[in-house]
Amino acid sequence: MFTEAKGFRAYWTTDPSVPAPTEPPAEINPWDDIPIDWPETCGKPAVPPSVASRIVNGEEAVAHSWPWQVSMQVWPSSQPEPKFFHTCGGTLIHKNWVLTAAHCFIRYADELQRWRMCLGKHNLTTAEPSERCISISGIYRHEGFQYPTVPTVEFDIALVRLVEDAAPTDQISFACLPSEEEILPEGKKCYATGWGDETGDSVNPKASETLNQVALPVVPYDTCKRMDYWWFQVKTSMICCGYTLPDELQSVCQGDSGGPLVCQDTPAGPWEVHGITSFGPIGCIMNKKPSVFTRSSAYLPWISNVIRRELYNEHTSGCGGPKDLSGAGGTVSSMSYPAAYSNNARCQWNIEAPAGKLVHLHFAGFSLEESQLCLNDKVSLTDNVGSLGTYCSHVPPADLVSDGNRLQISFSTNDKVVDSGFTVTWKAVDPAEAPCGGRFSSNQGEITSPNWPSDYNAQSACTWHINVPSAESIHVAFTDFELQAVNMLGNCVDYVEIFNGETMASLGRFCGFAPPSPFAIPSNTAVIRFLSNGADQQKGFRGYWTTDASVVPTLPPAPPNPWDNITINWPEDCGNPAVKPKTPTQRVVNGEEAVPHSWPWQVSMQVQKPSAFPPSCYKVITKNTF
Image (cartoon, rainbow, N blue to C red; front, top):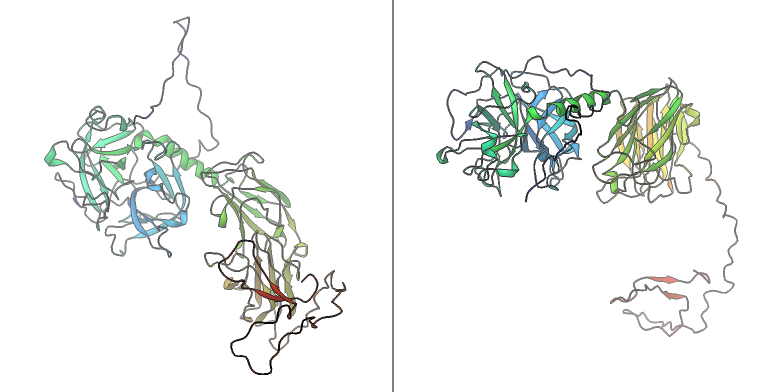
């Protein structure tokens, strides 16, 4: 199948002396002038690589001689507990950034928790003193990468942001980037590195235990685009590398994807990452099918734009407007609200109210992509205690108040369905204005879920902050407890969580219909948090705290129900059948057929759908309608 190229642009004129039309100016971004703090030293390994001889079939690299090499590892969904496996290579180009291939993220691109970047590695099968594995905070694939929707791997480039700085060591350092649009000459020898498959088995590839290197000369674009080579599949934004004689064939393979192709301008010059391992033939080695790399010099503006944009977003919400908000109140909205929000959004707002105040949130509008367990588009709320809930779909969170004067709102979306988003107002309030929960300092007190003893509200978040300075411990007990049971994954979705208020260590998260055992918190501060989702509200809970376990506070009586005084018109006559049943005096072991209609209160409860089984539920009539 042929694929479309860039297209064309032309002009006409009636006056050949008039200059040709110029390109429209590029759009100006607010982050274009932000400087990037590139590493002062790059491309200079503390341990020199072995590059003196021509290596035809590749060889094990000198340990840590390519210190920018990254092992990108994934925790697959087939593993119930975190267990990471090498899947792709990458190149460390900045203390916060790894350069790799977009096709490495065909799976799990929206699940950052499944990825980690391991630096300072040589042997994948052992734990090494030099290694450092870092979680990630973002995956940024090139917008033009459409594989496998479009059958081409053009724009096969991605950046990964680390959650923390990668400090350079003798085993961990940075590769340099080349000059913009730099083209390597024919025959230029470069080195590809990785832990890729050494067997050529495309069905069951096996990663190498140790890092390998292979020397590959550049194959010119005019050769590589020939019909007997890669023809239309190779683009000018790619580099072909490999030997052309049958007895010299060598290449990269599965597991090397995303890894670096590095070259030196001079034998003493720094190593520059000119290529990103992209694709090759099935089985990895084939005559006239050299390895193909994404040419990084073609994407330097894109690389700089992504990094600058994220630096800018550190101080802005990502949805427009500042990230850090303070004062008495304000409004936060998803981008373009009430129009559709953007795909792949990562927005965050840090709200700080004046000291002694709490942050109150009210969602005036809320409509996100429908999602079970909020795995897709979602709004997450946190304060100094922890989670205030994760919300999605079309049910807005109930009004809630933070514990403390700080609250964080995070909004993330995937690359699929979009909706109108949300708008939320926030204001600083006194602790007494909290719609539920509150701050307390008495020796005893009562805690109840909202609306007790009626069902609690959906999307609720309540916090009880109990601080008794004179106490050595605080005892918490529940007298009533009815919350939604665990979900299909065995996790509580509506729950009460209890914390040691001094250390903020969680002492347990509870749900279902059994009251937790009484708690003795060895501190003068206790924090109790209640969260509910948008489905299956129950009666809730009632309990108390006391600083003396021998003193149980007298709880007020439950509030009356509006139906408590309604009179029930019980039947005047009951228990006297018109047809007398047969009641033998001797013991009947196996039972016997009853006299028809001699037990007139017997009911057969039936379902509409016919069943091969006899009725399985039986009830006794206690009233005309029950």
